[in-house]
Amino acid sequence: MSDFIQENEAILRLSVFMGLFVLFAVGEALFPRLKRKYNRTQRWFANLSLMACGGLIVRIFLPFVPVAVAYYVQEQGGSLISLNTGQGPYLIFLGIILLDLCIYFQHVVMHKVPILWRLHKVHHTDLDFDVTTGLRFHPAEIVLSLLYKIALVVVFGIDPLAVIIFEMSLNAMAMFNHANLKLPLGFDRMLRLVFVTPDMHRVHHSQIKCETDSNYGFCVSFWDRLFKTYRDQPSKGHEAMEIGLNEYREAKYLKLIELLIMPFRR
Image (cartoon, rainbow, N blue to C red; front, side, top):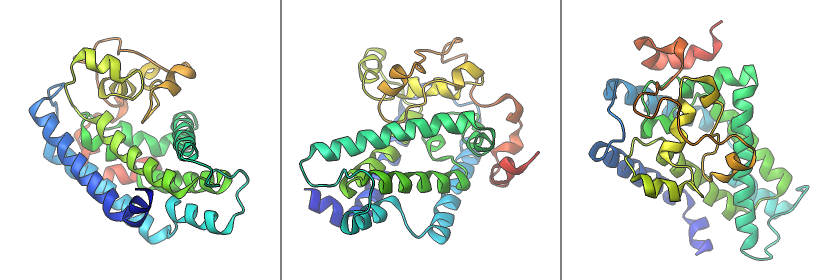
């Protein structure tokens, strides 16, 4: 199974991404959690175009991706801590959990360091919350995130299979926990004991600062519980809470060009 995943990595990642995107988009159309406040066509064009710009820039300026680096480190050695010694599947699991923990810390840092927040706030200026919000990241943030993951792979010598599974899981969970899906409350309660749910992550997109500074996890929910950044519900309730940032509520900030230049404005 592991050989199949590694040999067909590219097609598997694309298939999982496209399949889940369609699944969540249809799901939120049929069973929406909240009523949309803004035009979907304009928002989706901006969010998907931003994702495409990020992918193009990465392909042009960053020829190495975490999986390729993981294969190189595995073949050449040289990592400070080796998690690809082939001693059992538990190392795959350990690599995935370690990467998820590091992405949690990356997310916290993106909020706390002003120059990084300039990039990350593009993600938070979306005025609605749906599956495309999970793809709305500034290209510069995407590049920095890839460099960070490459550094993690080099330092820890994470197994290529763990990197592949984590990258697929991260993309899948980013779309899931941003989806405007109506889940039964009891199911949401059980699911968020382990995984980040849409209701849990939506709190993080509140315009209220203390709520934005909570629920940083993308995949598993226990990092927020462990590091005391977990917030169960928004103070105004999901129906009344405002999504986005107060200073970016004009319609022009739904345009692609505004999103691209936003971090560089005074």
